[in-house]
Length: 195
Image: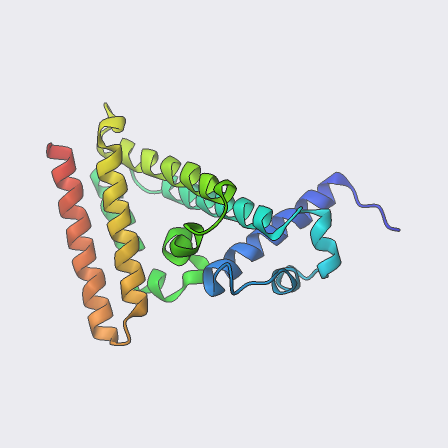
């Protein structure tokens, strides 16, 4: 039996989480079996239980990791209103819509996360609130907590807009939905700042 270092085991675990993130967002939680997830990571089914106790643990870990990565990416955007507009436009872009495996876990998995165990739902809640709090701090740097629920509502609208645009067969209509979603999100965010 080959013994691997802690670093090797951690790197392998992270590779599983990263490849699972793309697959889950592309095919859904229910549409992604352990065998497929492990094959994506270049590993056998047998190796799965050396890293995770269950598929649900992998899902919870992956959701948390995906949201952490999304938060890190947002931190690279310019501060203030200009950064907020950049985030909204990137989120509601045709590129994001057309590449769910590389995009937001909320837009790709929200309906399934709602049916997951409390552990996964808590991992999602913690991760999305971190994103919302960072986003709100851009808009209300002196009192971000006061605008938290309003910003969460805007985020929910953006997620729904992206999901609807993905579902529409009419490409022109799908693009128009994204454009209107950008307008709606920015209007609501500006109103949040003024209230």
